[in-house]
Amino acid sequence: MTATLLDGRALAARIEGSLRSEVDTFVTMFHRRPRLVVVLVGDLAASGSYVKSKASAADRVGIDSDVVRVPATATTDELVSLVASIARDEHGPADGILVQLPLPERVDTVAVLDAVPPDRDVDGFHPENAGLLSQGRPRFVPCTAAGVQRMLIDAGIETAGRHAVIVGRSDIVGKPLALLLASRGPGGDATVTICHSRSADLAGVTRQADILVAAVGRPRLVTADMVKPGSAVIDVGINRIVGPDGTAKLVGDVDFDAVREVAGWISPVPGGVGPLTVAMLLANTLLAAELRSSRR
Ligand code: NDP
Image 1: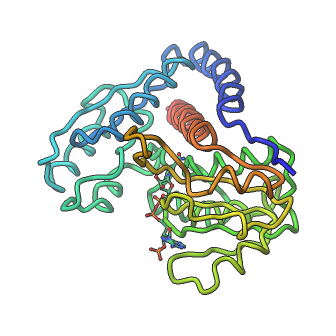
Image 2 (image 1 turned 120 degrees about the vertical axis):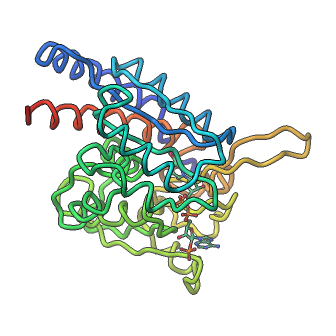
């Protein structure tokens, strides 16, 4: 069997198409464009390229965006003050505020993320948004988790009553995705298991998954013998490796070539979850602008 490919790029392009017309409607109603402000700390190549792709996607749908660059030497206090100044619109109107991760190790990431006001937290990382999601009344859902759920819904992969196994329990991917898949309604109602580095018999658990999501950050952690035949395998991982010929390339957490012979559906890396993460960020930014404008 060869799995059906879950083409995240094509789906993201369709989502962008509908967002473009929703943004047009917003502009007609409020005579301004939604605006996203991104804080980029240091000069990590990967972060720079993520920020660039977010800015060009925003541009494609008619959302204004701006990047505030900060040297890698910035302290926690400086970053918290910067985020507060952005929230006071001192860097122009900011419907959505995003701090690109990772921050340098000595910075208190939680303190910086908590400084983003919850009503502009388009990454959905603020405890208020995490709490709303856990209570089943989501506002800003973390973009990658939302993207995975959207991918499943779009492909017509049934989640209700199915066993979803998520490998990875981070606050930004694994946990919010578990909440989404266990929530009531479309793309939910699954029985969810979360695995992590202390899970015993990982392969024994993943083999029970109708839907298997890998969000770990370890190249080819999920091998073909860990996958139930016919299941849906979603690869969130992004790992930069250097091939035998010395060139760098991106791979996921799933051994793609072998797993595609066993699974029913599989998402590639690149071109799977990544583009959907960006599309969901745009949707959250539009939502933030709508909430803000309708309050005025
Ligand atoms: P974290 O490092 O925060 O979390 C990784 C998780 O994997 C942890 O829960 C960890 O367990 C678990 N883990 C580590 N090793 C193993 C193992 N051997 N077996 C089982 N579980 C293990 O990562 P993130 O959630 O932030 O990101 C995960 C991956 O997704 C990364 O590659 C990242 O680059 C990618 N990513 C991709 C995005 C996209 O748009 N496609 C967006 C965000 C992230 P423990 O908690 O016990 O340490």
